[in-house]
Image (cartoon, rainbow, N blue to C red; front, side, top):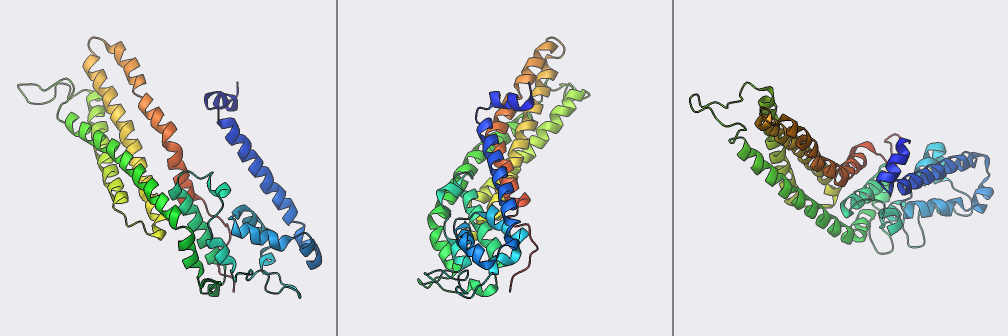
Length: 332
């Protein structure tokens, strides 16, 4: 049985995710094939196939794959002009320029595949900032028919999403903070209640020279430090100002650090627990410690299944993913 089949049985949604990803990749490849033919077409042919409207709709709805591919293969297509419609790509009938269109809230179909309102807000900001980066500076100052600049329109369109993102971020931080606080309290207590007890004559731990005891001390210390760090990081998330720009990198970065230190504290706590069980039972029922240690990996597995995908998604969206892989230069 292949790895794919194992995942398909263990995780029923894995096949759906795999098929959706495959369909997306095939659509991107189809776009590349189509865009390679664009330089061969005349202006009249481009107008006939409705390319101008396609670009307009792609920017309006946040279809970054479409814009990314067309800029990479044929950058000058965005600034194409003809004799009949010179200002076609500069403004619509409401005097919205490209940046105004990017400032509008993306439809639910574009946001639903992103986990959580905070990451949806981050994606919206990334899309807006990427368009701002490549468009001429004067686009940022232009007003539409409602006398709004692109930045003002963005704030207006995303007011509710920002409130939902703040609520989502605070709820997530509060839940993780409770867990980290409990771990920190337990690890602090266990540091002074060593397994095996204390030698009454010397005042030193009885199993001080045991390798298992050394593992316990190191794991306990790391768990205490990492859980305490996690508490402080999530406290910083809860007390943040939640400004619009904070959703771009500041808040996701804090959440990433908090989740990572929380995950690390859970792992080291289970290591400390396993070593304590081994120390206690090694002289009489050493075999009992083996299944107990194996069972101690269950909380780690649950956390990995429930929270690790969110951590990976935050890492990718914050540090590993740019919408446009093009040089950072503004078009004049």
